[in-house]
Figure (tube, rainbow, N blue to C red):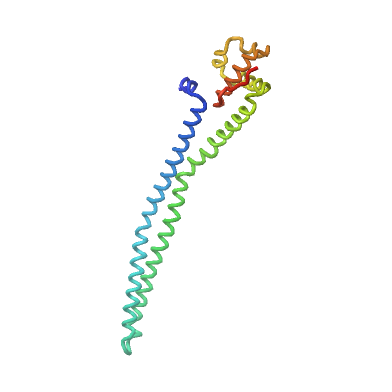
Length: 204
């Protein structure tokens, strides 16, 4: 796996990693929305309870209004209807409260589902990506300057794997110390490729 990664250009690896992270975030957001929808379905009984309680209360109020018009005993007859309508309204309120609780829980559980994956992206991947962008930007700004080539060559000697340095020749370090322009350019190009940049070095 390490050998395969060494053969893939840095810019390509960065692009693949970016695509994987975007797909990762998208899938977890979709998962969070799915959790939200599943929890929201628990509020369906509350909706039915609210609808039934409201409808029952309206019907009882209508019936009580009609009974209340009965001469002499209307006021006495309407009391049971009024009490029953109040109980029905209580059922409707209970259904409404259940929907509110389910709505809050659906949001909380959806956020909990995506919190850890997004935290990994924000606190692990994103800082490393930004650091790479800054390093690549600095390397690009000094790429064509003679002093910049020397600096990039020094970074290559200090940070590149030994097998990569050995490909440039057994005396690459000595050649760099002697100020050999070809050795400096070769080392600088190696460092630029590590950062995903083209080694467009100025001649001389």
